[in-house]
Image 1: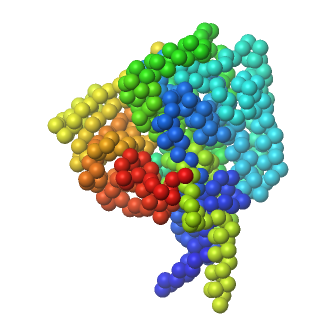
Image 2 (image 1 turned 30 degrees about the horizontal axis):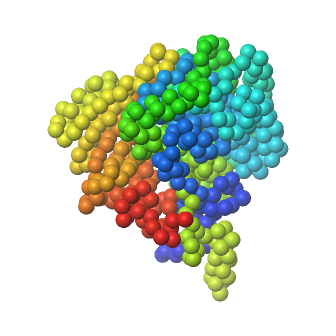
Image 3 (image 1 turned 120 degrees about the vertical axis):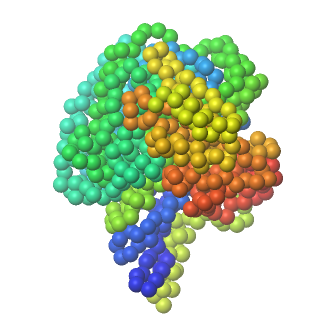
Length: 414
Length: 164
């Protein structure tokens, strides 16, 4: 803890993280405090950077599929969709319409499980563990459906360049519909538990406020932007996959209460309403999905695809509205090589990182965990290199930081 | 805003300083919709002015800045989009510029778009670009005391104990 004294006031700086009970992944915050009030915050990501982009520039895109999927465990299909679209756009590879619908269904199932997971984390940060256990228990239903459709709870290995690897069969459809009915019935209870609970209202209303202007200027994306009234939703603005054929509109908090405040409460509203929206989208997709090919290549076709990738050149952008916001992949190929010369991944938390500062300014220490959680940060997506230094110690662990902090406290006490 | 209108407006404003323009039409596989992706190749001197001109249409969304080492020079691509908030109205606008290794200065756009800071700081640490007027030039994803720039393919790259 560092103490800074100017003429009128005394500020303290407390480090929280890189590892801390309120953080599921490493991220370091340094808070400047005046009493209980947060004056400013400095954020240092990068504790888990793995250099995935450079690895992807050393192998062909069919090999990178498995790597891209593992950038993040929560939104793994999102990375595959964005990556595959980037490659397909760069090289002009078509995707059969049925595969586009299957991608939408899996993407929306992922949004349901991600938003419900987040709701549980938010409840836990507020000290409401009964609600955490309830939300995570009801989340199991969507995990089961994902396992039924793809074979896995996470890292589904479903999307491939030019299509998807598994079809949704006639026998599976009723089970998906049954799960959707389960969530439809449940939604009223979840909305009641989160949005009509006086304790949650007290802890989240006017806390972590992000104004419309800040959300716009600091490039916020996804539910973080929409909760402040910035209507950015790629599914609506620049529809892709099967979204051009589906009814979808951006969710903002004014659908639930008269005014947009941009606080944590608004972020809960947006995510819960988006669960409802996803249910509707999957129902529409199941109804409209045409019969036909899914673009799953045989071994021979795979070799042909690789030859195409090698012969063609081009650059492409793949954007996807992931549960946390805009996910962006950019890839460029030169002729005579199947190895891309450039691959850039930009995840939603990268864009939302700067929005933390205005949200924290003026907050209380006790609000720090819920504000950290409110953008639904996904550090695994954002950090991509591990740095090891031999000989010297460079990255401080939580224990070292704490020891330093205690030592300084003792010293200051004299 | 039609994509051709946007391109014409940039051509009228910047003339020969726009080195090349390309518009890709990305078609939906359902065959019912397509959207434009515009690529501008510009001189680095006009970057700030070009971004200001883009802001005159709508405050743009900046996804990120991608960059690579081409040997003699670095290449940066700013990935913007405008027209969000309107159903099927969004178009992608990309500015590409070359930065010679002998002079790595590029004017920061943080005064126009404060949210560009993360992307610019990332290009400082990974490529060694020097942004003029950036409010915070420290490393973001890499340790503050890191030596070398991981995306560089020359002697400015990462060496020695920093590599495992």
